[in-house]
Image 1 (cartoon, rainbow, N blue to C red):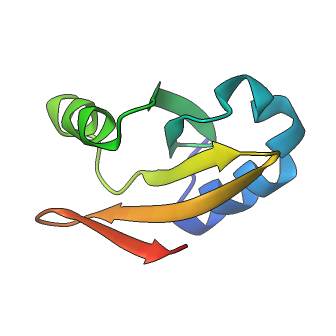
Image 2: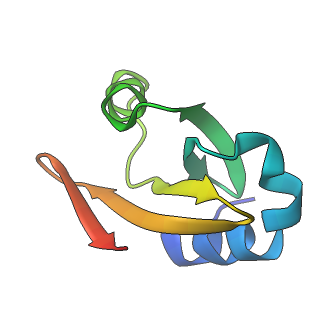
Image 3: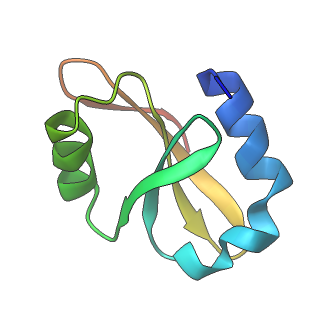
Length: 81
């Protein structure tokens, strides 16, 4: 399956109940699956770059919802909070 960031975002919304194990974590989603997670955004971003992932959907999970959206360009930019 090949997903884009909008599809990945929708996937997170649709599966938020299943993502409760990641509460308090930043997650990177590619092709509708969590590929990297952790409590430190910088470390998650470093792992994304090390693995050569392009344009993952990155968000923070908390209280049963995703609460921030990040994009990696040259650095990390908060798209919404």
